[in-house]
Length: 328
Image (cartoon, rainbow, N blue to C red; front, side):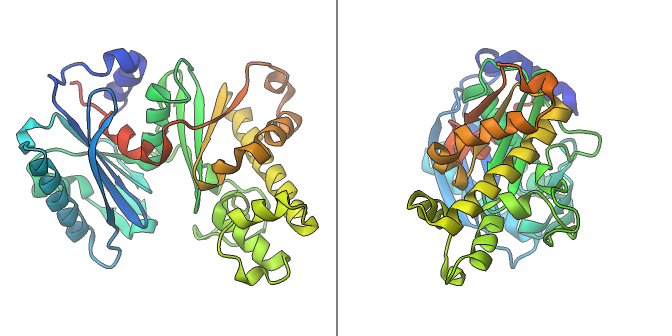
């Protein structure tokens, strides 16, 4: 499973274009609300892409059939044939076997124990390599974005939930069960808030956009009318005392979670993306300061540790999927 990934990541951007013969690649990002399909060139540039709604009410195989039909139309619109495409990679929000494409658990798209890789091959007549979407985003950042030139990184996407992708020693890290990077489901507060995973006190129940919004709705007068977590930042900027308290607790929970992960992984950088990361001017400095306060002194006193903002934007998972080249 790891050999092809190891080759790609260790090679870096200049060598990851081997054996493409000038052909374009396809990246597919399957999310809980939308699907992003793109034709991507060898340098990770988007030639053309389309965004489609995720059809949660249909079965996995029907969803994949829909995606494949849309992909074929996109390819044809550029005057290409499927045979002109060098590589097709896809990402899903859940646990998937990189080798077989078997999805063990993808609750946000209602894919559980589904042979998605087989379905894609039947629909397209071509192999599609599946990987967790957060891993694809981490790969894109490592090869083309904020992680260039680094060796060990953790990428966190802070949105509806929290997704994580890890690169250790220039290798995309899957772990023994294909679940490495599930940072959102480490326990931050024992017996805390109920999480959709069935546990209580998970990191993402306090730090994700969903978690922050829930806390704000409970704490602020008329908070039940708040429509997004971003409003907490807006109110904190205006010096609202309750919003400032919520914001400070959010930063502290965020810092404790990151410090715990860095204690274990000893990464040199944590790269942040997602909707809430857009407020970096408010929280990046206090977040780093508190991470260093909570972290083990052996690395916390090291000046080389970095908190970085992602550079690849919302298309990172799609671009990363297109970079999962098969080289064997």
